[in-house]
Length: 473
Image (tube, rainbow, N blue to C red; front, side, top):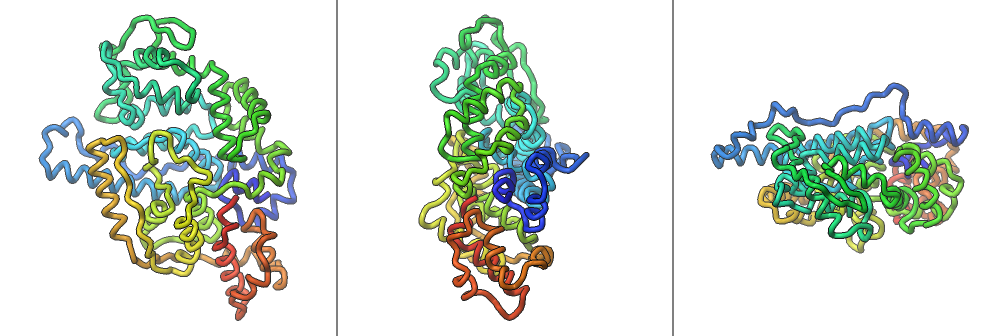
């Protein structure tokens, strides 16, 4: 069941896995999908709209006022990243956060405005397990995405095709399933979509092209909402989304037969995400040995998995941003419009060595002596360029600093209370690793602290977490 725990979340502890193994699969899958009964979605907001300056006055701001605004946005996005990481660690519904992490990459977006980032991740988390059509519409109308993809500049007689292109290529159908004329016509339909200074979606009717458009074989006086509906009518959209979900939750190599079956059910469910995930998690093939321990954990999965296994709090929570950057996945800073490629791209010779050091750096409070790679500005945007410089400056200042974390080992150690001493090493490896057979007990014993049971559990745990096998889930 640890396979399900990692794919539908960030791994679970021995007591949870032991409980799951006594129950029927259907009961556990329902619990994973639905989460705690009557649990409200807990906000990760870090700022109120009223806390921000009046952007309507931005043209009249002094250089000092502009600097203050930039610093507020930069700090706000750091705070938002920390808040979301903490939520992933403590959430009673980890699948919601795992799905949100997937959609965060699918709907990749960079904006220097903390409020816009906060609004977008809120829409994603609210709709992560709901209806894909609702999620697509909410994201498409978010100021963050409209700004990122230049739809503010999309006006009648002067259409900007960027937004329409990415909606088709990255969000719905995938490249090769539409023509350039479809993009041009869709761009006309999206004219007038924008947002105001308060971060609210607005439809500017005077900027909208109300002529007849021809899109994917259909003709009419379409607007942006009509385009999204037309895209959802295409079975290719269900296939494209199902393929990406399969690669994220099952295997980097798509199985065309399985995907065809899953996408048909997804399409006929009206794009109900929870229904699709239930089909995957309930299927016998999902638990086939070829799918177990075959995925490389993303940096966020790795970090959150460690923190959910052994509860901890950092003296400076922003330290997590440095770990994210060194490992190559910084929340709210996707590398480009296509998001993080994932899979084998997570690991190279240098990142693998640091990945295996992460548990020791955190759990032994070691010095962080690896320099994070600098972020690159996205799409040459001036505002993002300045903000990127600020983030890079922050990352540089963390070099050679000691990582101070308060580790709460008690609940973790207590979870192994009923395990005989001679079985501890094998049991710990069995819980932490998806394929524990490659780890030799004699090697774990050699480096373990045998002076006490607690010390033994701690050191074996850290040693197992520091193996190449722990990079897989």
